[in-house]
Length: 193
Image 1: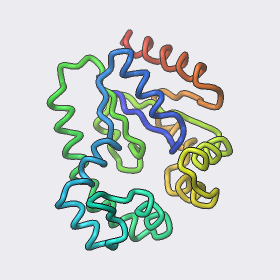
Image 2: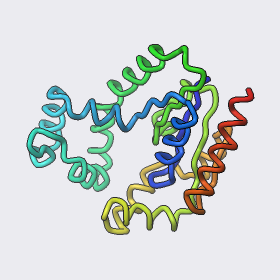
Image 3: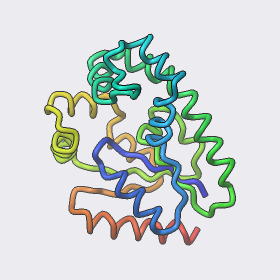
């Protein structure tokens, strides 16, 4: 079974993914694949050509600088997606094919619906969070201003819309212990299919 895992930024997806891995699931992490892809020399050159040399720091992508650029300019965000998305999708599909023997594959893809990749999944799990909590978590975690945090949230599909599309959802407005209990319940339910 392939379970898509998605949700908004700072919703708790990483915690859910980590727990699902501990429980025996095989994780395919789109953010991890994206980091690998963006550090390749070929992609770094393309990004430098299309953005500027200031997004490259000591031969590596300065993700913070790139994020500032793409959330200030919709065209730049689309350009980045056009460069990165096809390569990331290809690698995700390769990972799925190379791990078909796994009982439960988790596709941890933050922008699963936005990139229309739900077709790869048998079911989708969305981690939901109240927006006010989400903004605070982003500000603290990423050390950014509220305005940028809100722009990042606004660039994604609203969580309520994701929740309506999903097969399963987890509310994460409490503490980590509560979230982990919910993940175990969901895992046991999925395992019984």
